[in-house]
Length: 396
View 1 (cartoon, rainbow, N blue to C red):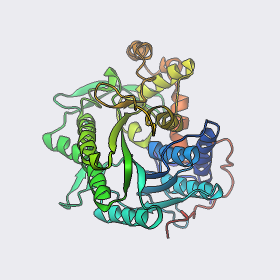
View 2: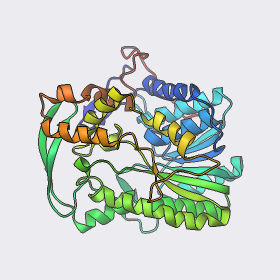
View 3: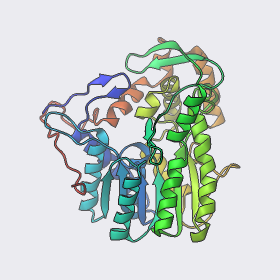
């Protein structure tokens, strides 16, 4: 079938298998052009099919030669209907790994569930024995709690008072003002349940109890802080409460891992175009300004550049891991540079539909958004027939 992007708000309803393969190949190529890593060799990535999770898996496998197991919840294709982009990403990753003789297997299902945790443990025992690194990179708006059976939905809301600020429709470039009503206590608690640290801790409890964590194993989960212009709806909003909980959970897990001399880390990453970030008001406007400035300074990074820098410079296997006063790895350091943030604050006040054409990088934003779904790659002929029915080799 000929596959074109079909948009609905901040979601693309289609994905392109050849473009997704190009996405994976481009990330692999980047890692292969960097110095080889002396890093973790048996890596479990929970949330492995897109974004930072996919980039972490690629970095581990093609940077360090690691055996990887990826867990994700993606939709396979059916005749005439494309798979989700993460499914195509996972298929391409496994194909590329096989060509290099790298172990790579995947599990598709609800990572919040006890059943998927047990299936993962069984696979580790069967094939790897133990893992020495666990990456937790889940990004889901809902969670079916495995103990209570309650379905929790997260909310993107401020806390305490109505939030009013600028945002941009990245499809049209129109800058407008948006107001968001404050969260209820239920909104806050549901968001913490979905996006906080409880499931990360459940994973680590299960892995530790099963004996599949190697001596000195580490685990890392990804967070975000961001600037003052977004904090009311992000870091001081419902998502921020969830991130606070996630970060506090790292200390709890570290205490639990003392029996194997293990450690849990939070990596605070840079703002990037993702399906999740595109759904958060004000974030697209902020990212378009950020991209323009960081590209002009030569400090812009995508997911793969961030993750390679994380594993090569910060989450090192031997030696001291540099952290801030809260014990967090700060790979957002280039984004939060004082000069960059001061310039964004100034441009924010001046930004409107007309001026953003010069101030921001909406074209870069749109292209990165299309890339998430396998579109916008010059190497791909989008007018040609594509086979939507792609298998992930290890998933039967």
